[in-house]
Length: 261
Image: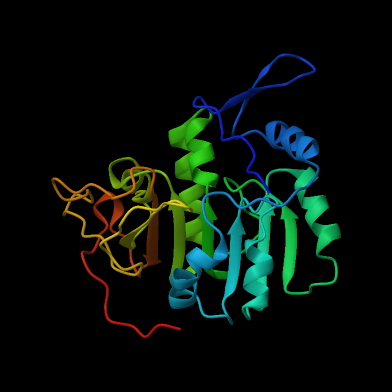
């Protein structure tokens, strides 16, 4: 199917009933959008087949996973087909959650809950092995009070992950604009960066998909580094470490050799 229109640059839409400008972080915007789209499936940024190497490496199928801002994506369905046993899907839109509950009522591996990622107090601390987000943080960064919303989201994800758990963030944001938000004062991540070309990119890519991109000590791309695809997606694999180091939490320039699925 054709993709829905991308978010406006300012992250705001219009409430057709009142003319009020709606932030991309507001449930009303997404409720109206999903009603208009009629629940048609759509995966933002990347489909599971492109992300599978990362998910399989860092989150085994027995992991308890949190899918943030699930929308109408097929990714969770694809992951169940690939052997994943428990995926909790959350979204701020009650409309899309109800649609997805009806669609997947007979798949016990999938659970759908209406929830704001900035307040996931329904879940106890350290209750997930992995959290995945493709596009939700970007949406919050387009909305009002963006820095506060980002801080709330990242802190909640950190709270919910068990030590050694992994937050896989897929975003358009390069390290200069995403690493500062990941390194919240209460968080201690080991961050490894990968870069994926957008779907359909036909240019030549020099790196293998699981080749990490080195970061400087300040968590930036090396001087002169330019992705082959200017519209690439940045994949941050953030491992929750023991202890707290605050805003100086480390990034790494390499990843230990691990077996691939």
